[in-house]
Amino acid sequence: MARIRNRRKPVAEMNVVPYIDVMLVLLVIFMVTAPMLNQGVKVELPKVSSEVLPQDNDSRILTISIKADRTYYWSLGTEVDTAKADETAVELGALVQAVRGIVAQNREQGKPVQVLVRADKSVDYGAVMAVMGGLQQAQVGNVGLITEAP
Image 1 (cartoon, rainbow, N blue to C red):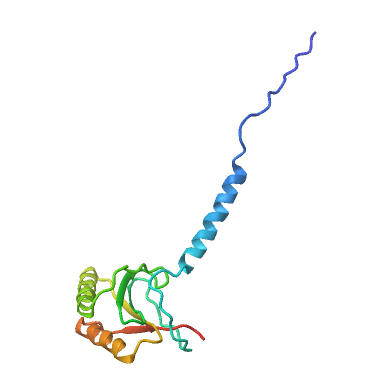
Image 2: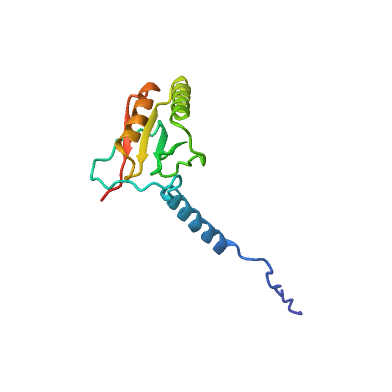
């Protein structure tokens, strides 16, 4: 009897398992570093040692930034560091109206709004107090001030 030999042909398929592993590692890296990115208006914060504010995960975060030239910016996001700022400066009256609308809309939805103020360290006290007074007019009860750790 003749012996029948089965010859295996070489497999011409690409092994994608290592590529999937690399993709998953990159996905984890991007998921970890994305919240750390600091977007928004460039403000040089004062360095003060203070306690961290308690954060409610259900609340929306409204960040108001005051640059050194007393221009006001606001951004609405879920986290402070990943808040995307509007690129156009607004006047104080327009800022108060926007905050009033955001707070009213979120109250209707049952979501609390956490308002945080970022002011450049060279901004005078009057500019920060003008924003605080505007927030009081917009019926914002609690306001947090953002600083940098020394």
